[in-house]
Image (cartoon, rainbow, N blue to C red; front, top):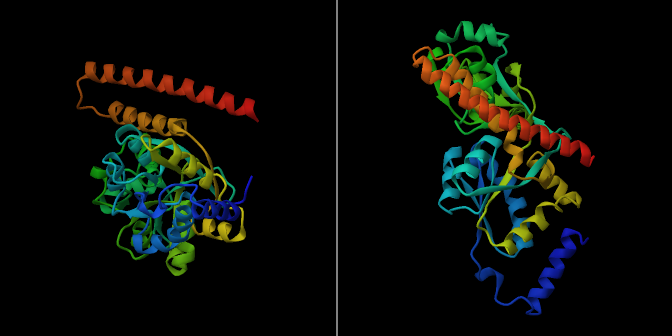
Length: 333
């Protein structure tokens, strides 16, 4: 297999000899969506060299699309304003279900782990050292929740911290704010919120970008492992374009320069994936819904029983699919 630099040289020669008709620059640019885990000002320099290499590989300009929240990136895909995007699992699920998206790749973290973890953060001088202590004093605390479409900032703590304890954070806390990971961590360090959601990847980045602030924060809760983030493209993209994207993503990282660019994104590479990556996330979303309904005493008992039975049936279907997926993975090893 040709290395990426050799493939680029071959592509340039082919274009120069006129084997590919029409100038590449005349083609429509590809638009790449990037979820707002941090400010675009911080993220843009990290993505620029990666997208420049992608542009060179596929032969058309690749433009980044940054937004202030996850929903805007999902909506951009829904209305064909972007062609592919880096999402978290929860936002990828929304893109697949509501925006004509399809998972084709999964990031491989540079720490060699299979994923990352959701966290609950407080300041180092906070009197609270556990979830139980925070929930017991929630009415006096300001809570920094994540973006509603964030896996680690919203969905995962929403189930494990709140739904399993029968707590509605929007009612339990004195005040609740929704922000991205970076903003939440800095708000904890600066004493603007008492407790906030985050994840291990964002905290690793904070230790590099704001080491003094990172030292002022402690974690009081860590979730089960969350699968690494997916890349999603529009299902309607031309097959030729999809083939070029696969060629780039699944071979990128051969050179030291490419490894350094990936390290800036906290990746060591990318591997093939599909929509089945979302099965545990779908299960978690249904578990969360079930816990909320089971703890809601305002509902009619008959309706509640019927709704819980429906959710149990869907959960059983998901469990069977996950068991089948796991069995296939073991057999392939």
